[in-house]
Length: 149
Image (cartoon, rainbow, N blue to C red; front, top):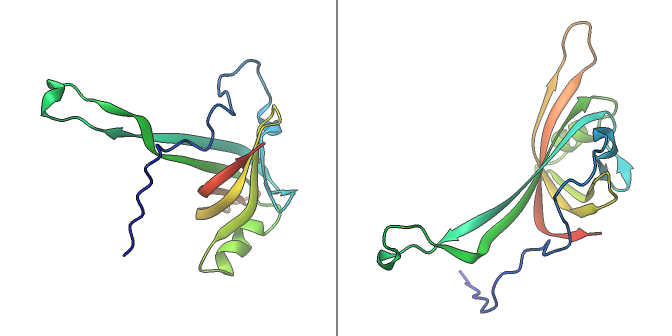
């Protein structure tokens, strides 16, 4: 096992590139997910979740208070989607591969900001209710450093 130690502090991939504060209201349908430049058909709800994991550096000199490192240990982006099944993009990915990678996948925000990268499809649930369209829920997790534009 090779361990690589980087002496430079970790800089999150987003840096100051995106301001997540809402300045104006926006329609949810204007946020979408694309695969290879085509919008995944049938999406009704897109739920991006970002997380920055803090690094606890509390020790006996912290006087009983938690201390967190100024840098964080890991940044992540998960995209939950659900909608009506109108094509077989997600199902085909699950059925035809043991490695369910979605390369060239892009989350497009309503203000034009895009986050592109490689994602893993970690779950897919389809529901077929009587007298209703087949619906789905799925989760994509970002793998690696995204490209922000």
